[in-house]
Length: 197
Image 1 (cartoon, rainbow, N blue to C red):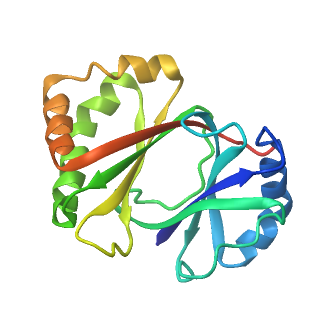
Image 2 (image 1 turned 135 degrees about the vertical axis):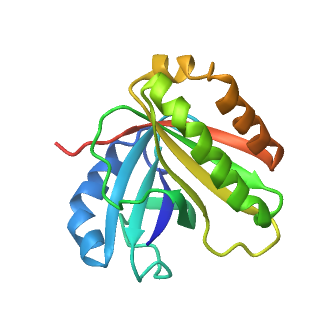
């Protein structure tokens, strides 16, 4: 299973309302084209008000062109990713709450396995202590250079839970710090899952 994260922008509007509507109108066409929608995520912080992420899953058609989503909408970015230690079940997101996308730039793609293992170990207490859940940790499917991009998506009930989780226990914190030394930067984006009515 591979995933494609598409960053969409509505150049003609200051909000993402038209983006969401276009995705709902074309959902059946997108999904009949061998893709399934993992989730549509509106930005709270880190995305412009007229941008969102559409995350697609696909078994065999990951290299297909980005599906046509709306004539007036612009694809700002698109990246194909493969799961590491999560997700193990490839199903659309349905739980309301906050989804933080944390993009990592990894200096050496040979470190990906260690980053995944450090994350898996840290989640043991991190998830238990704060009632959060790591949805997945992905790596760029076909890095063209020695460095690569990784994506971690974590679910929080709300921003209060996110703030509380900044004080993880010492073992989780040690793993997160070690993970940080293996990356050149991290860029978090706070979103909310759009749930179709």
